[in-house]
Image 1 (spheres, rainbow, N blue to C red):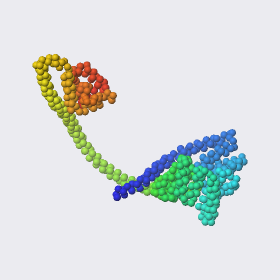
Image 2 (cartoon, rainbow, N blue to C red):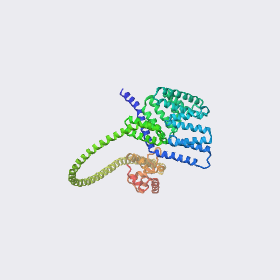
Image 3 (spheres, rainbow, N blue to C red):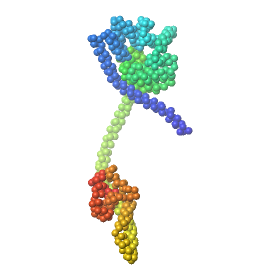
Image 4 (cartoon, one colour):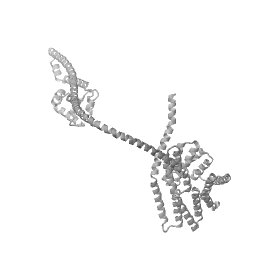
Length: 549
């Protein structure tokens, strides 16, 4: 039961921990982008300067002048209200001057949209009333109905008189229906179709369907654009309405704010909304930082509507921020007085401690001298113990070798005496039976010597490997990879290994080794040189062999 209980807690806690980590990472990224605001603004100013340069060319055609001004308006839109308004009016005047009706209607709609987004709904409607809807092409008629729809949507919300609000509601529904008829012929995956579809679901509080459409829009939108910022902003609103998930609401507000900063969007709402949520959660420092950032953007853009939104929360957050810092200041003052008192006590204590320290230091110097002498004695004793241990190990090794070889060679001598006696009896038998020829044949052959030599090698190999069982492996570690010695199947040691086995036993003279192994001195020398040439360190190879244990 306990395991199941803690397992359930772990399962429930893991998504929450992941959400917190994700939010922390997003906040870090947001504040990094806030610090880089000037970089993005400079990039926008650079694009604006390039467009102005193109606009100032002498041989520019009226159409190009209009199109370049439109691009300039697009750069200033959501960046500077006054500049946007100025260039739209300039383009509208220019369109009327050249007599292009399409340009006139397009600029009028652009101006109406700007007025609607800045809260000037009556002025926007007045402009729209000047346009005859039937004369508009499909791309402009959608903008026409969208602007009307927005104006009446906002007017029905802010109106305090029920009858007037109901009137605005009817007009809102009428323009909404007109807009829906216009988009019915569009591709179902087009951006404008998905935008209006989401708005329709949101309008009837069908947030689940609206979020599905929003997810599709968000997947095709690019971070660092007004489009992405707007989609993420609406998603933050919908998730809060659907399940009250504050973490998800903050997540999408942060993503929206990041996109606003990267696109140099000054007419934004995400940062202010995020500041309000953080303030309600008690994070006053960050809330004040974000609302101040949002206020600077609104001031730069110069939108009365945005100023109005921020003015409702800025004083409250600022007051709480000042109150919090005042409390912190008072706390710091109290702490400073307390620390000052402690410092005075500490100074007095330090005076007495210093006097005692001088006495202790004098004693420590005497103790240090005694410790140094004791350390020298300990070092000497350690060296002596190490030498004794080494001598003991060497003596133990020598005793082991002696015991092993004494036993082995006593046994060999006994066997050789028996073999000589057998050989004597065989010779006597051949002489007594007058088998001289057979005796000569027996003496001429080397089979007996070769057999005895094999037995000698076998006994030597077994005895040596009994004392040094890892000799072959340890010797090979001293050789290069392609020079390592391998014994054939059925062998214990080969000639090279026997030579270096004798060197390990202290027999280093090639003449003595040749007599023991019954090879020529040159053969022994050649084997030694061959193996040394394959050593990792040729000069110290034989010394290292002597140390193999």
